Length: 129
Image 1: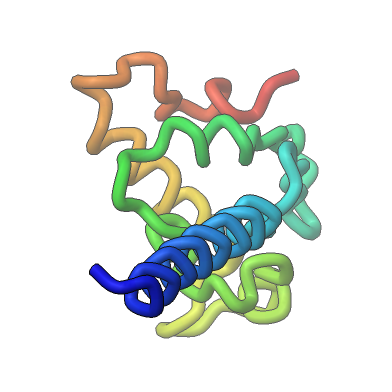
Image 2: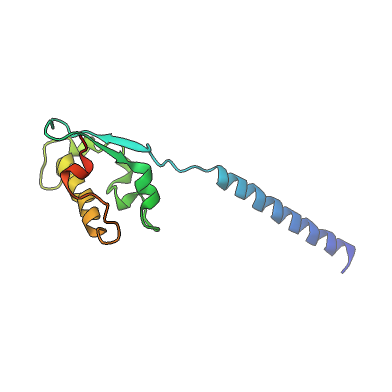
């Protein structure tokens, strides 16, 4: 191989390696907003049950692979402001917050009960005094 081809080949290899390193560093610095680690869920106007302290980080870590925010949040773009829709009086399309969370959370917990028997499905499982 002549000198010019060799230098071009070596230059291409080093350039490719440098780009891969820069890309890896850029991806390593990319952080996904996972939301708060713990969330206290208070249903507006409810005095019957204590608020739920929801371990958001634990659920994210334990959720099955392939899951996305949409697995739990039907509208991930508005996931931090559920009350903007679910805080209004319920209608056929939009249940109140309590009903929406009970359906989503308890439904999932009942579905996975055989593989995760500690997933709470009773009131006191989530509403701790």
